[in-house]
Length: 153
Image 1 (cartoon, rainbow, N blue to C red):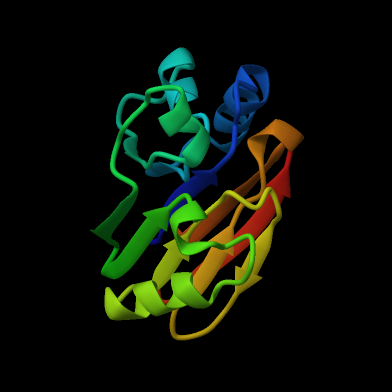
Image 2 (cartoon, helix red, strand yellow):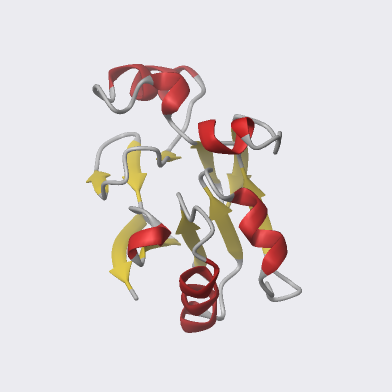
């Protein structure tokens, strides 16, 4: 049975949009927040059985919200790396990010920071959902393959 992952990033206090995205995409198994607004998750209702993965972004740090900067988890038989992206200078290019993901054996890398949607297929899939503050998010389905879709509310 494929797993459904809701991916958000850069919510920056846009609680109504974040809540609308969560309500629209229910049900899902995992909620990933790629940073900059991770504290927003504590201000909305997340379905009780949902696994939440979150990382700290550069704005979160300046506001005193400190979580892990990069996490790697096994989900649905795939190795997933989640990071905000600023540490890997994703606003310049994705080389450092892809290099780190490859070193970590990641099948999928979810990131934010750029406020730009991005998808690149390959041995390591790169996916940025775009900013929640603009109503953008992503849905990833993992089964026999990894399917990434950008969506907007």
